[in-house]
Image 1 (cartoon, one colour):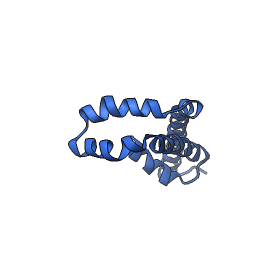
Image 2 (spheres, helix red, strand yellow):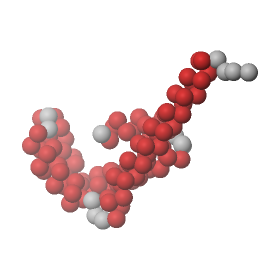
Image 3 (spheres, rainbow, N blue to C red):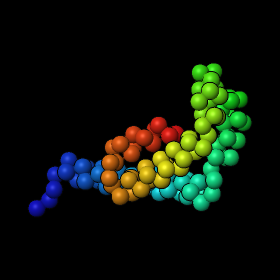
Image 4 (cartoon, rainbow, N blue to C red):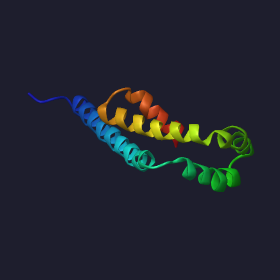
Length: 107
């Protein structure tokens, strides 16, 4: 008994998505590890001052200047834990649609 081509394609497509999900999860964890090991606030502050305020859209520049810069410690913790949780949930397979959607929010 052989499987129809559509079923085989579905199995291969789902297998490819699992591999992609695991890869993206590992990328998030690798990106989060240095942020967990040391204070990320100075790095975020440097990025915001050198990149976001120099090359960002005027609306984004105002947002960074008025909201993010005064609260850099809060935003550095949000980035740190966000990357760690998204990576872990993608690898484990929990909340995968939410985690995958938040990937586009973070990058």
